[in-house]
Amino acid sequence: MDQPSQPPPQAARVSETVTSAPIRHLEFKVALLLAITLVLSGAFAAYVLYARGVFDSTQKVILVTDDSEGVNVGMPLTFAGFSIGRVRTIELADDAKVRILVDVPTRNAHWLKVSTVFVIEKPLIGGVRVRAVTGQLDDPPLPNGFVPCSIVVSL
Image (cartoon, rainbow, N blue to C red):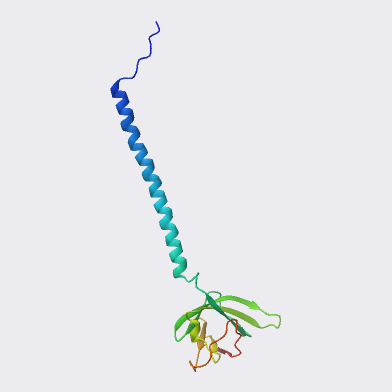
C-alpha cells in the first residue's frame, strides 16, 4: 500500500537547476542596474548643482533704494552686458527704504569697485534691469556686505 517515496528522476533535477540559475543572474543584473541608475542620478544632480553655482562662495552687496518696482528675486545683476550676480531677497526696511540683497560669486566680484554705480533701469519697453557700472577699474574692490550709496533709477 504505502510505497516508499522515490527520488525524482534525473531530468526533473536538471530542469530545476537550469531554471534557478538564470533567475539568480537576473536578480543580480536588476540590482546592478538599480545601483548604476542611483549613482548616475546622484552624479547628475551634483553636476547640475555645481553648474548652477550652488557650491560657489558669494559676496553680498546690499542695494538701498526708494523704489524696487519691477525688480524680482532671481533677477540678474549685469556688468557690461554679462550676468555677474543674482538678486537674492528684496525687503522693506524700517525707514521705508527698499533693501535689495544681491549675491555675487567671488569669481565675478573683482568687477565691483567702491566707485561702482548701481543702476535700476526701467525702460518704456522691456523689463527692468539691475546694472553695475564701474568707471575706474583701478579703484579698491567693493567689500563684502557693502551698502553702496550711489543707486540710480533710470527711466
